[in-house]
Image 1 (cartoon, helix red, strand yellow):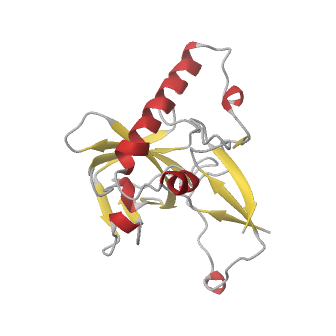
Image 2 (image 1 turned 90 degrees about the vertical axis):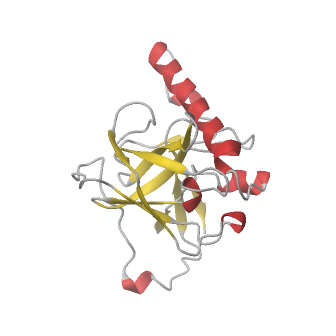
Length: 209
């Protein structure tokens, strides 16, 4: 059996472990990653000989309808024109869940989020919805990444399709299940090799919990 893990912060759990980034996510990771992804997507658009598959290193391209709950986030930051990036999951027609550090990392504060649904890209296609309504966990501590969770509210309900659909939440009977020995699927824009290269497409990896 398999379980899907909601993964936030641009699929960078292993990168955080490597860099020991406790604060300053946007400057250290989010902004450089957004710039790199944008350049790669522009290169694909400019050169038809370049495909998504050509950019995959040790990962698999997720079919567009494989994870309809997944949403990319492009983040405008207060006091700067640069853009950062994170990942999120659609919880309901008008809510997505992400990491609190995507809104405030202890240094940089988000001014607006663009939620991208129904696309394997961040800068190309999909349904794109801007929002400034975010609620962080009241006990979130940026320095220690505690209670690192936030909810974004969309200004309207998105329509469910075969490529956009809220994630299935656990049943009551699953709440105390540790899922030891289950296959877990992590989805997001992120690391696809031991060299910690970051991907501009939507890959997925499976590991046993």
